Amino acid sequence: MSDGEKVTTRTRQAAAMRSWIDHAGEVVEEPSPSLVAKLVQAGQPFWLDIEDPSDEVIDQLAARLELHPLAVEDSKQFGQPGKLQVYGNVAMIVCFGLDEQLRHPVEVHCYYTTGFLITLHRAPSPALDALRREASVWPVLGTDPIRVLHHLVASLHAPFDTLVYQLDERLDVLEQRMLRKAGDQDLAEITAIRHQAAVIRRTLHSGRDLTDRMPLIMSLPGATSDTRLYAEDINDELQDIMADLTAIEERCITLLGLHASLAGNHLASVSRRLAGVATIFLPLSFLASYWGQNFNVLTGDLEPGWPAFLILGVGLNVTCVVVTVFILRRRRWN
Image (cartoon, rainbow, N blue to C red):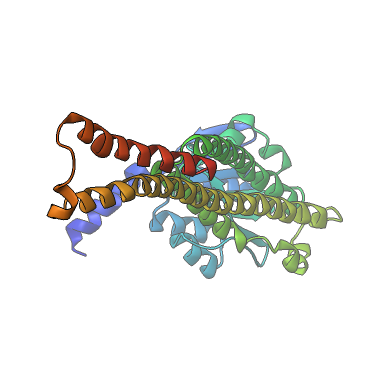
């Protein structure tokens, strides 16, 4: 990368980055590094949120809060699976919320040590913005570390219930529409819903085993007898969300089978109608080919004129059609 490209990249990152800090119940937009340093030195609890941080900002933050190099490397390379790590006195958890349209997961890296909460994410997070407006995080800073993270993670997980409800409602509408008339558009929409549910479920899957890291969690400063309860509740929330998403996927598979069945029934109905038409024309074709041979023994003795045409030409064909339709209806062919 050339020097000009590096400058352009840094300029774009700086323009896209958005941050705020909540301390003592006061929210400061775009806080200066000196303010963060002052709060750290004074030991005052704060919540710092940074959207789309650059590598330079992450390095400065790591140096100020003495974050572990492995944790810093993870935050520079978003796309991490859900997990919880403990680096000394700092708990680092990778969790996920949803964007404003409830379509794509938003990866959030949370760092918590006694009194200091840092959240990093690339995309906007409506759940974190709502927490800031509620001013409900700062009062619990400095308490049980998992209690703080539980409050944060629970807010990130809340929109998933809305997403599951919306997907379920869309599937209800699709099912009713398919029963009236199944089309290719329904098939594409069901496949899209199934793909969305599968992607989100796989994203959340790796972060569901918090209880396996209970010894690390209990080693954090400030851990209490309730720490295990908060960790288990986070784990239960993840399990419930994944179960709901799995149910959505299974319902999509069922609707895909229903679509295939309805399409097969429609094809069978069309085939029966075509078979009925072919059956009607089979004796007519035989009569036409038989009388159309024009041998003298067939045509030489027939009476000329309209009576012979109406009786043998029209009447015989109409009789064949009526008899064939009558037989098909008796056998209940459509």
